[in-house]
Image 1 (cartoon, rainbow, N blue to C red):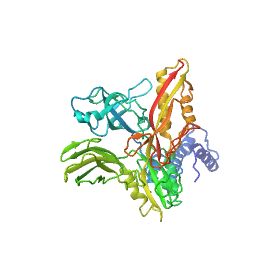
Image 2: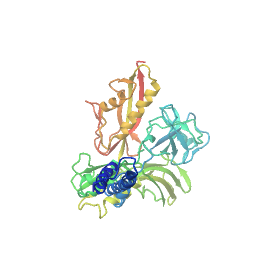
Image 3: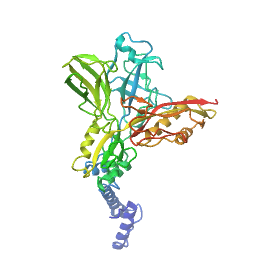
Image 4: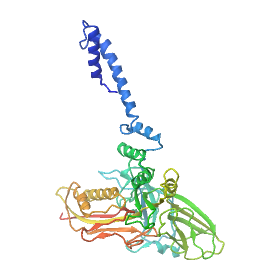
Length: 484
């Protein structure tokens, strides 16, 4: 149906009424025009507008806003909500604590407000304790910064990309914190705005058009349609970075997600046997008690993550390794976090609806590849250097956060982003520091290669080379001003 505007309806009605009543005065402002033309034309045009809205609401390609939400909900497809950034905060003491320092879950922290930026609030997502016991306290010592420090996971209070903040920017304890100071050594990440109409429409059409779930692109679209999955990459047996099924038949789907759940394993210790966690992949251990008493990582036990073919999946053999063995039959209680989305998606892709016959599919959590940058920039006259360094830091953090899984980090792109900040004249080449630190099997980070030979740096171009299951993540970004 052709949709007509008010003016088009008026023209048609003037023509029609003029034929029926050729002597009628239908000039603008006359009684005849107002009663017999304009008034009904307004109602008809309104009806056309409502018909247009109803028509658009029946087409995924044309619908928008709430209409698009309602239309795709018929196929159980929902718009991805805004997500909150997560990260790690360090609580620091210049001297060894003389009493235990308890930082409860929900403690509020924030970035400072400036003339250009509002503060961004975060809360701790777990309770951490810095023990004063002389046997334990030495474990908190950071010889590089010469402080005693303990880390805790944090999450932004408000969702959106604005919750992705740079390293060393969360410095204000808005809650009660009995430490000398706080700091995030790496950027927060994972904050996303609500999915746009265009992205939601494209994702819905990709899934509903079929083309068979068994294709790699459609497995990617299926997995990325789930709330909590920021990005996904599909690796088959022919891919250079397949480590599980080199001989064919296997598909690994790596996901970038910040979704986690807490679990508790309780068991009685059997001498010489390491405990494999019930829920996997394990992210970190919150606490361990033996016969009701607390024990400590690095002293009594270590978390050992599986780095074999099924590592980072629900089939991994993540376990606790005892440095000091508990007494036989002692009750062990372990509270830990794991990636629950990996577990739920595994059931989805291997279910009868989505599974491709003959395909052995495993969902895995991507490794973080932490990008560290130190650069020197020249600033144009008249610009505040502190504002410029902050702006460059934010621009680089946003750029790295936008990279896809496995996407190489080009040095030329880093330079272009920095020089695109208003007030920056040039960037000194080569960059002072431009490297990647990959997450290791213990969940910490180091520069050691593991699993396969790591595609780390192209020393000809200086670019950082990512494996398909690497998630480029903002690490330390330092911007120095020269020539001022």
